[in-house]
Structure formats: structure tokens, C-alpha cells
Image 1 (cartoon, rainbow, N blue to C red):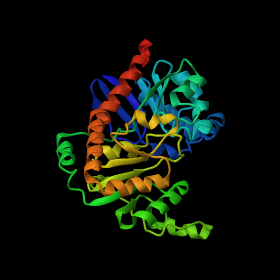
Image 2 (image 1 turned 180 degrees about the horizontal axis):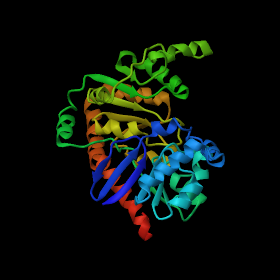
Image 3 (image 1 turned 45 degrees about the horizontal axis):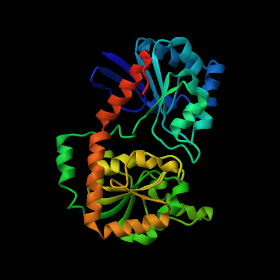
Image 4 (image 1 turned 135 degrees about the vertical axis):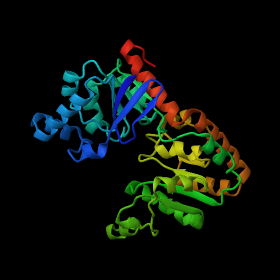
Length: 347
């Protein structure tokens, strides 16, 4: 059995010949803000007692593991990692790039054998693969679809396959509160009205949108309710269209919602990425992509009024999602790629 430790929230599981054990990020973040490389380095340079105890415990528990995956955050100082885990295959997860590249990624990945990235698009100048090769031509990289929570079963397939003609609700948006996105949500809300619903874990018990007025910004005049995971997945089966947008316009692509929407039978309505990298994930027969919010509104209205066209796109998106973007598929591909690095095999 190949032993894998994953720095990420998750439940331990076994797939094929891999046994995965997760180290919860919330416990680590109580120790330090590992989202900043300088915070990690300060602990190391200052020989922080609690941090050294953590490293000692980590070594005792995982020193014989075959693969280390730091997913989103890396609590292991690169110098220590090189000194104490020279034989392990070390993988860094570029979950938040390009946003975090210059305050986390580039100062840490020198100690890793490979990186995986979830966004094939980086910016208007580089794909993510091109960016990585520009930094280090010998560093192996792997595109990981952000679909590791899409658990496919026969029950799921039956539920979604029978749902396409029976969806009563219009357009859904689920996401955390990010100020840079609110203006777009305001425009959708104004144009779609009762056909548009927003859910997410927003501050101030869901009233954060109202409080924008205190900052002399246009308020979002709706309370946004939080959903449990079970409630969220139930909502996904009730709506016709999922509106999706990324943090940076026309830069990164491939957030989690981009994969969840088709997997739960909604038609994906998403923003485009630089260099058309969104087409790597779904093509224009499997999802609908917009250039700007006005175009998104027009597309939403068109497909709400044309069920046959929407359903055809949603069905093709679902077929692709269940074929390529499931928990089992993406984990298996990632682990096989990582393990092959030991033999000098890159993909």
C-alpha cells in the first residue's frame, strides 16, 4: 500500500493501492497564517517552540510515507522539508494561483518534486503550464480538475438523469462574499428578479450586501442564506442554470462550482478565461460562456425561455462531468502522476 499524507480538509480513504490520510487545515491555521510565505518563514527562522513541536510530531507520524501533498497551504518549511523528507515524493497544490503566486507559491515550490494546478489559465500572457515552465523548465506539473468532491454513484446518476425536465427554479449562484463580485450580482438581481437566487456564507448573518451602503457602494438588497452541504446539493438538483464567475475577470478558470454545476445537471453559465482556457474544461456544446455581465444576463434570459436548448447543453455537460470530473477519476490521475515522478515519468 502506497501511503499518502494530504495537507487538506478531508476524510481518510483508500483508492486502488493508495491509502490517504488528511491533516486538517483548520488545526494548522490556529498555529499560523500559512497563506503567507513570510509567516511560515518567521516561525522557522525564530525557532518558534510550538512550530518545532508540530514539525517533530509530523515527522514521527509521516516519515515513512511515500507521498506528501500540500494542498492549498504548505505548513512545512521548504528547508526542513528538503532536510527531513528527501526520499518522499513532494507535491505542491497551486489552488489559489494566480492570486497567491507572489506571496506564497514561488518562494516554496523549489523544495517540491512537482506541482498540480486547478486553473489551466493564468493570465493573458501565460497559461499556467507555460508560467510554471518559465519559472522552472524541469518542474513537473499536472492539471487537476477541481472536482474532488463529485462523488459518482448509480443513485446519483439516476437522480440527475431524471431531473432535466423537472426543474422548477431559474438561476442559482452559490459563493462566499467577495466585494469584487457584488456589482455583477447586483446587475443579475436587477434584471432577473425572482428568477435569480443567491446562497452562501456571507458575513453579518447574510446581510453583508446591505452594509455596502455604509461604504458608499451600491448595496445588494437581499439577505443571503447559508446552506449546509446537503442543502446545497439538493438546491443543485432544483435549478435550471448555475451562474458562475471567477475572482479575477478573464484570468484563472476552473473553480469548484464550474464542475459541480454540470455534475448536478444544471446548465453552466460561466465567464471566459484568458487564452480560452475555459474550453479545456467544457466546450461550447457542454456549457455557455459569457464575455461580460450584460451578455450573461441576455444568455440567462434566453435559456430560461428555451428549455430544449438548455437541457441539451446541460445533458452534454453532465455526460462530460460524470465521465471525467469525479472524485475517483481526478484523485486516481493525480496519485498515479505523483507516484510516477519517483521513476522519472512525467505527464
